[in-house]
Amino acid sequence: MLVGHKRVLQYLQKAVAEGNLAPSYLFAGIKGIGKFLAAQYFVSAIMCIDNRNGLPCGQCVNCRRIANGNHPDVRILTLADNKSSIGIEEIREGINSLQTCSYEGGYRFWLIDEAQRLTEEAQSALLKTLEEPSESLIIILIAHGEVGLLPTVTSRCRKFEFNPLSSNDISQFLISKGVANEKARVVARISSGSLGRAWDFVNNENLWDNRVAIMEIMGSVSEFSLWQRLEAASTLEKLASSDRLQNEYFLEMISSFFRDALCLKVGAKSDLLINVDCMQSLQKVSQNMSEASLERTLEEALKAKDQIKRNVNIKFMWQNFLIAISN
Image (cartoon, rainbow, N blue to C red; front, side, top):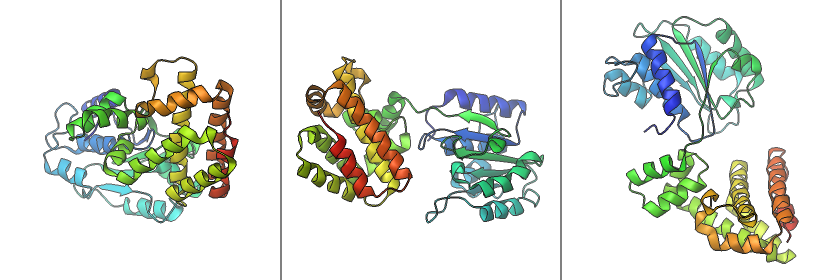
């Protein structure tokens, strides 16, 4: 189910209705907000047998096959589970497969998900196809942002920026799926505008339990002895294991916690808070830590995220971060 993005969808609908289609598109935005679903929706609108003013019917054979990922004229390239990037061989294979005519005599589509993971060599191989597009081929790059993509690639695409979803949109969706109102409200706040992340919190008990553990540690860490901080670092390392993305995600949770504490410290309204279920801990931290200390902690969290990207030892990263937190 596609949630939000009304402005982008209206533009795409109008483009389909008027036949104003570009040979290549870039759908950019944070993970888990529906960019891939929007790409499928756009392709369905173009391919729909019963298209009505740029809207897909969702019921015809083309719409169903696109939704199920098995339409012969829609090729999808995704990042392999065992890889950290999309290489030149995958792009060459895709280009070769698109040299044939459409199976059904219309457009062919190539959806490249996680396009920010394309290597420079892969992007260079793709560039010629973008520069000399086939009249019947539409390429849609789906990325977390333009970072990692060559300017020569992005400049040849019609760009659409997908904004984070509102808390209200996310909570209403969760409630419609049977999630209790209060939990839906909290999850919507802490998911940073990502419906995918919100859905993970609802369906993955370990993720929710990890967050609870993280919030408990952060609520008391400023009072910890050095030994307790080292023990807490070991706990966080074990919870995230060696998954670097998970460690980054933990740091995002921690940043949101101390950001909330800083908001309380400077007298901001409570409706600006993210972690609304941690009010007692937030009030305690905002009272125990100075404004300058809270700001330094947020800076240290950013440094820690940068260290993860630079492959610094995870254990040492957590130890240094927790030791740096002071009153």
